[in-house]
Amino acid sequence: MILSLAVCWTGATYISRYLYRYVGTPSAYFAQLIDVILGVTIFIICLSVLALYFRHKELALLAAIIDAMRRISKGDFSVKLDFPTRQSEFQTIVESINEMAGELNRMETMRQDFISNVSHEIQSPLTSIQGFTAALRNSALPVDKRNHYLDIIERESRRLSQMSENLLKLSSLESDRSDFETSRFRVDRQWRTVVLASEPQWLAKELQVDLELEKVEVEGVEDLLGQVWVNLLHNSIKFTPNGGRIGISLTKANDNAVIRISDSGIGIGEKDLPHLFERFYKADRSRNRSDGGSGLGLSIVKRIVDIHRGDVGVTSAPEEGTSFTVRIPCHWADGPEVRRKKG
Ligand SMILES: Nc1ncnc2c1ncn2[C@@H]1O[C@H](COP(=O)(O)OP(=O)(O)OP(=O)(O)O)[C@@H](O)[C@H]1O
Ligand SMILES: [Mg+2]
Image (tube, rainbow, N blue to C red; front, side, top):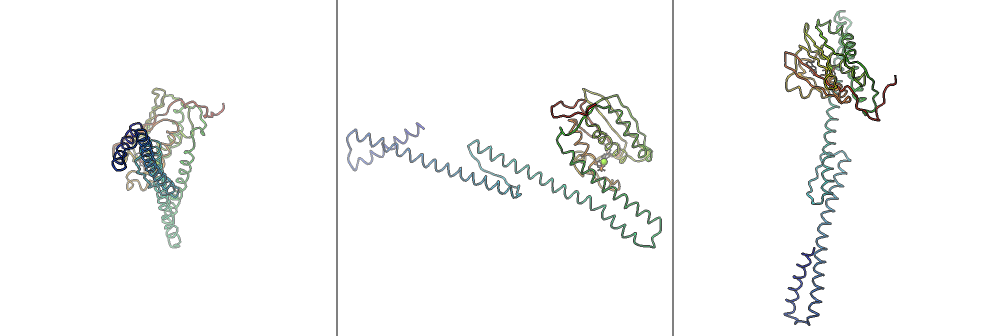
């Protein structure tokens, strides 16, 4: 500021000296007065020009921000503000808007993918139900064929209902962690119940199921964790050929329950592993098209494990087998928001 004032003053002196050549030099007092007035006037003009320039830039930035917000409110999330500014508060606003637009864009893509996945998953069983009901109209159809078609219709409708159940489950799991009621229970007992309940399925495939369960108690949402074990065990049964082996171990490590479920099944390719927990993801679709799943089981597993602040990992080798490891903290993080079951 002082430097610019000095520059203006010097400029004023030069200008007045130049003018005095034509109009004659006034007395020292007037010459000084003229210098002061001229200097201050030049300084004010410079300041006004600068203020106008910055105000113009600021208004342009505000207009761009308002335009971006309008486009976002109309559903255009491709907005990207590219407005370099030195004012840190404007820079923060620009960055926040870009971040918000990017996040909304990502969510919109996910929403569209979700809708197209749901439609696709609904469409294929419906097509086969429609096809086989039309075929059943033929009165000359032999009884065994008729029964076969009816079996397919029944299986496909069960698949549809299972999928809608899973979708409902997933959306209910989106609720806040504090909405769940926790209790203390023995995970080893829970596993035994799950394995016993699935006995008809693994016996039908002549699978050998080995259990190695330590006594481990955790605090969590019992029926949700039960769902995790069911989904993992059903996958192992589904993706292990007849006569295979499934091993389930439960240990306690650093106040965590660590569950490992391995099978000697078809395994999963390396490229599929990072996507397994995504909704509707099915590895190698051609191979397990007949298995009838909709690819939601593992996303439910992931969500429930996240609710318990645990983690789940997978290792696999194609044609050799797969192993899922789940870690669940034995204690639900205490907080005033957690309601516990009484008794
Ligand atoms: N134990 C396993 N062995 C081999 N592949 C597996 C195993 N578990 C999961 N997968 C692969 O991961 C995919 C996703 O599993 P997920 O449980 O989410 O879906 P799904 O079993 O196909 O259908 P859903 O569980 O909704 O009935 C499966 O389609 C399968 O390709
Ligand atoms: Mg599954």
